[in-house]
Amino acid sequence: MDQQIQANTTMKHVQPDSNYMSGFGNDFETEALPGALPQGMNSPQKCNYGLYAEQLSGTAFTAPRGQNERTWCYRIRPSVKHTGRFAKIDVPYWKSAPCVDPDVISLGQYRWDPVPHSDAPLTWISGMRTMTTAGDVNTQVGMATHIYLVTESMQDEYFFSADSELLVVPQEGRLRFSTELGVIDVEPKEIAMLPRGLVYRVEVLEGPARGFVCENYGQKFDLPGRGPIGANCLANPRDFKTPVAAYEDRDASSRVVIKWCGQFHETFIDHSPLDVVAWHGNYAPFKYDLRTFSPVGAVLFDHPDPSIFTVLTAPSGVPGTANIDFVLFRERWMVAENTFRPPWYHKNIMSELMGNIYGIYDAKPEGFIPGGTSLHNMMLPHGPDRDAFEGASNELMQPHFLDNTMSFMFETRFPQHLTPFAATEAPLQDNYVDCWDALEKKFDGTPGTK
Ligand SMILES: [Fe+2]
Image (tube, rainbow, N blue to C red; front, side, top):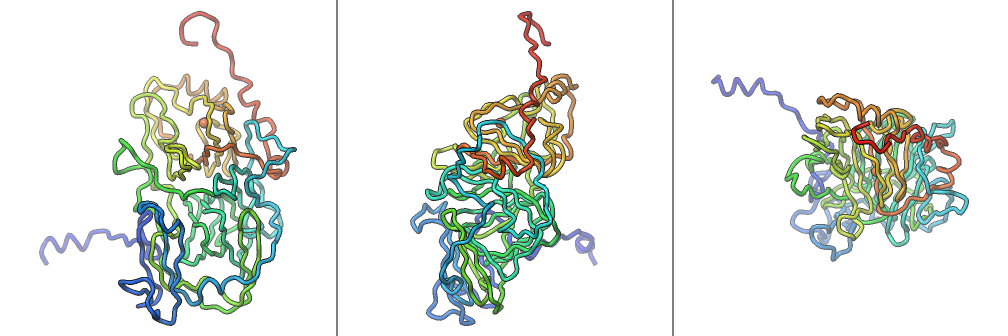
């Protein structure tokens, strides 16, 4: 055996997870049975295995090539067999914009403790608690933010939202999304994206499960342009994982719940709609491990705008002005010299909803705890509290590793309106606005730092 081969036998070889395909917005192809995927064409006269060919269009047919998304599905039954007549149902805690309650004040700085679990059995649908809404679901503009509390798996029950894609940010517990296009398992430090119109069932792998959801009514989330950063860092496309094809051939009385123009409907069928045996295309769910996000930041002085930490951005039609930015604040080195290192004081035309996944957020060492939420609405000032300000103003300017921290922001160009749940039932910290009370006037007209 020569040296070269000997060396190879000791090489560590890590197999990628074969349940997922790598890449962002790729044109994927996958089949759960050999030969189920037609080759060289989309719609043969007869499909293999007696499957039906069906296109799922995520964008208008004529959307520009760079935005055009569709997937061809080869399924046991066409989707027309997965719905019947619809009946409206009440899902009281899942709200859609516009949801402006005259008795609720949304003007202010707000912070909530984690919404606690209750004894009530809650599924993905009944456990969704809307915190804020923005824009208008009927014109496909804006978004909603939710906290989910899930203790029960959906059984013979399926869901899809025609209104929105759902960005899921787990904070506690593990969930399985069994979708038409494959299976995604997620846990804290990961996110999942469920495209508009995709049918799925949510199961609890480890409960109770709690997390955050951003419901995007508008144009799909995309990777941000990196500009002068170049071709690498931030979220890298290879770290996005789309599931391989998986299907169920199961006859059972089943309920399908549909969110459509802010209203919920049910319909009953006699089989599982998760029957796609093979598919190809670029309109598909994915997950992403937030630990693979490569932050870029200040290496000499000043604190960059938080947009430097954008993971995904959903455009609004106005260049550079997002319907939603999903921004991640994670572990990183702080090395800037002669600099106030935490986030500066700020007043913003954009509305910022933050959630804490784990650890301590540097601008608010106390009060913003894992599972908690804060909202700094359009043109409402915010920034470090007194302790954070004094600490950062007087710390030694040495390299410092910001450890044990992962928070995120859903930032939108539209004002966010609190739901009655957020204003009255969720654990609102009434004293949050007082966190800036202790900030002192230092100015006395004489020069010099104070
Ligand atoms: Fe801000």
